[in-house]
Image 1 (cartoon, rainbow, N blue to C red):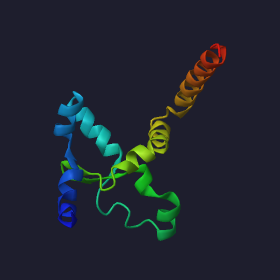
Image 2: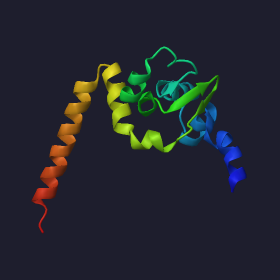
Image 3: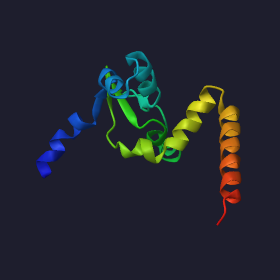
Image 4: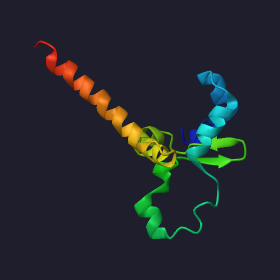
Length: 119
């Protein structure tokens, strides 16, 4: 079992082309998507240590971009922090207010349906 760790890098590394095939999307679109949740090596060198802990860049960008490959060393980080990541992406795209409205509308509709349902 301990030798299985040697394969971790291979199992945690993806290229946009292989992901695009799996999800039936264009490679450029997948590449762009993976790029916004990835950091390149050395990107955090100038960030003060205290800011790394408090800001936790790994939660916002759980992947490392190595050329054409993307490494998710802790893949569950993306799923665990998907709301935080989506919030950041919506803010950067200027869509945060629209996302919050869509979320509120959806939740209100679901609540209405749930409360009207007979017991």
